[in-house]
Length: 484
Image 1 (tube, helix red, strand yellow):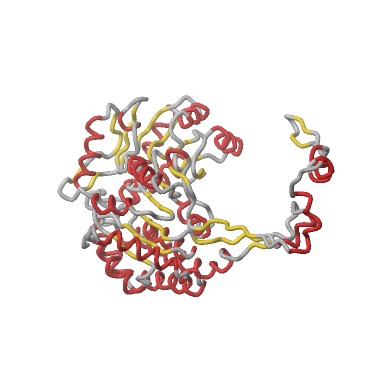
Image 2 (tube, rainbow, N blue to C red; image 1 turned 30 degrees about the vertical axis):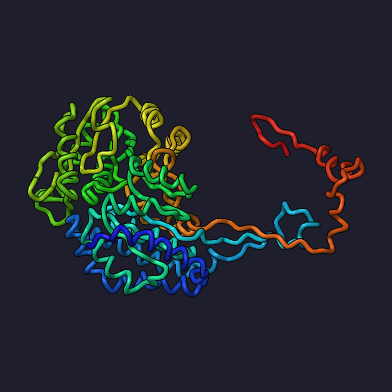
């Protein structure tokens, strides 16, 4: 990775605005070609990409292909196929709420690209979190500045070399570097900023964006809880929760952060976690080639410090290999107020907190920041409905973890502290477009609208305004709503 010179960043910004001004990126053919070039880039360089991510994260190639590369290859192709539909002008002449006399005014809505946009990607899932936003921005017809994380320097350096070979450099540029570079990037005026990361940095980005009134998409993660119904199959719940936790060594925004269990189920759940761990890693996780490592020593020491400071009881794991930056999947039973419940652990720690019942579990979740995702293990449909009503989260997933990331038709995003805005396919396209409305009011309707002009008369009021005051309001009740 080569840091982008600071004096180049304003020039990149200016060039992207200049390219957008030519309307070159509005062409559907151009957009489709760029999207398919992304697919070609991923397909033709898949091994180099997997190797780079392994060099940065120690992430097994299987996880790279399953959770990142194949998804982006698929979504780039789908976006190329679907962008004519997404970008199509919507004719509202036959809208049921449009008065008959306005049908000839040609009411239209056109999804219109916002302009030169900025995508800031993090290090933990470097491929999907850099390419997904880029796909949406290109599909929308925007020009793109992609700021890659300096923490995954091997991946960033690879993309720094590949993107100019595959994509139009007038419209897609890469910026690499650390705090100085991203600070300089944020000083520039962008037409949309798409950021994935944590709430602390998001506040800095939001403050920078506010200076230019730049709209944002923020995907921020947080503490994603798990509710375990005592009636659920503990062996299956444990296997699926542990699988969600061990992905990328727990360094993912949708990782199960803590589990709420009743005292009667704690022992069974933990025993089944141990059973699942033994089946995943017969020789232990510290030497396994199916388990990633912690990204760097800063994060290794952060996670180590959490385990040193917790007042909870370690029920599984806890082993470490500092030289290899590996920490075993670790299960800790805590009480309210423990350090492990303060913020997202972002590592291979699964915190257990005992609650009296499922109502208490919902109350605990509702009393804290809204999570990006809430996982609930229950086959009880009434309990599923109760959790839906009693909590808020960006996503609500029943009876598994992590798999929502594979369901490409679902919007993905947070609420409150876990972020705002939605992504994946058309939802990402929508982030980078706005609905531009248009009308074409013909001269021949002048005799029907002339009463709008001053001087205002009593006759004009009776014709134009009075009828609106006599409209019949439907009956309604608090119990039935609209009574038909």
